[in-house]
Amino acid sequence: MPRIALLPGDGIGPEVTAAAVEVLKALDEAEGLGLTFEPFPFGGSAVDATGEPFPEETRRGVLAADAVLLGAIGGPKWDDLPREKRPETGLLSLRKTLGLYANLRPARVMPGLEALSPLRPEIARGVDLLIVRELTGGIYFGEPKGMSEAEAWNTMRYSRYEVERVAEVAFAAAEKRKQKLTSVDKANVLEVGELWRKSVAEVAARHPQVAVDYQYVDAMAMHLVTRPKDFDVILTGNLFGDILSDLASVLPGSLGLLPSASLGEKTPLFEPVHGSAPDIAGKGVANPSAAILSAGMLLTYALDQPELGARVERAVEAALKTSPTPDLGGNTSTTAFTRAVLKAL
Image 1 (tube, rainbow, N blue to C red):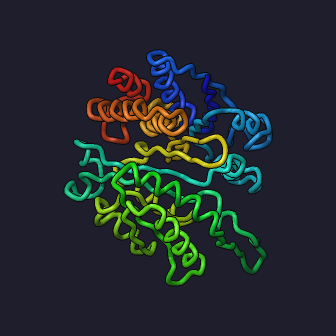
Image 2 (cartoon, helix red, strand yellow):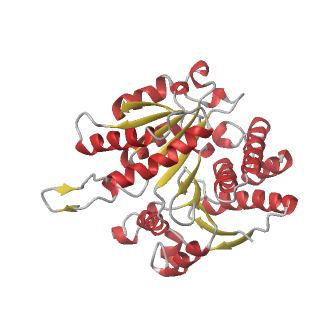
């Protein structure tokens, strides 16, 4: 019986997580998946309840689960806490605990919804790409780091092993898609970028059926908004992936449409890309699409049910066309949108 650890988190996190769980329970009832769900405190709400953003109870729970479904964390309420007590520090610790070194963020402009994109329809039409971001290395985790009154310093560091293992994930994804991969670095000025490119090239030699090209990150930022259809799988490091995936997330027209999966050594994690949006929390207007699509990725990557994952994606697409939420110019509530997805399923 697959065990799903639920980390609803803060702000709209509990609302969108509840929508995703409804969809999973409906599929469980129809398909006999045998799913069990157990909630755990995490993020700002965990700080309020226990004093820690990632309590020991939650640590044990996620390690024992088959998959983790996370809502969203953080908000101004906790911004002034010491860094080690902030929700975002808990998220970094969660990723490290689970060894989640590969973050998969799809960005797809759904047919018929091109008008939602800030790009011209002819540029947005047909965009369907996947960013694979290295998640546990690079400048966010490199040592030494520190700060004095006069200066601050961080270290961007990668080992060949760290690059090769995330590259293998990206190439495996490319083989199942359009057999095309773009590796993004800054090899012209950074030694770590030079190592990244050499390491990716060695992995590429083991996947000769995948066409590979290399881009500098500054050029890639321009290409993502001028010719996004030219790309399929985009592989990059932690810092560049953080920035580029947020840039790519606007292509479909709303952060509320973007799911993600984080894969690695232990329990895989699935979460919407958007934040906790405390300004609309509790109003019943949050778009649960990203959370529901994240549940679809959970079915595909954690439970090896890609057909069910695809069904979830088609149901969300159908619901978006008939019942858009306020962020997409409609007036459908969170619960009503979830009902539309269930009906489409």
